[in-house]
Image (cartoon, rainbow over the protein chains, first blue to last red):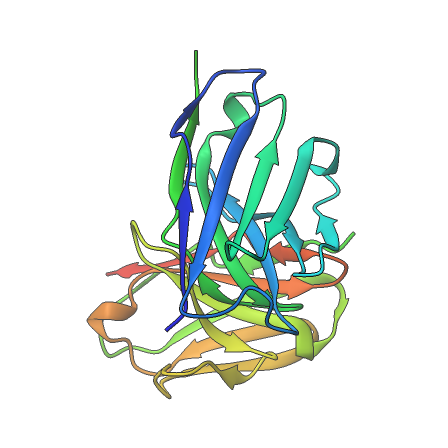
Length: 118
Length: 107
């Protein structure tokens, strides 16, 4: 059964870079047709897609975050990663990694809370 | 840019009642690209419906989806205690876009 697990610091200082990694188990990140993405949810609010990557390395990002986001993949480790630069308190959220077919998110990680605070 | 609106914001119902949730898009959306998710407190969302009307694996048949164009509906025929949650619609255009959600709570 496919599992996704987020890891990374739970506290990031304002203006610094948020870095998270998602480790995939029970399946290969190199599976064709699937994308690997990041979605976040501020406390008490709705879901916002951040961006996604294909195993080949092609990426697409939410236009509202594109200037600050980098998503990369490491197929040898079955992992993909998120970097979000110049964070502010507005970036405080639960960050989910996910697997999706182009239109539909099929699998979610459990989520990790990242707080931006000095 | 497409905007998704969900109504009502909160739906208060009793177990056994029928729930009808609406998702409206500001522009026409391909039915193939409309999905619904359920999220319970402290949990990740779970895919319920994809392609507007197809149930995901393991989803009970009391959940059904319908609609086309700009208007889509998620119906829960008879609410079970575990169905009280927040429901999000989501569409795919050039990106993944989620609606603001509808909370179904116990009356």
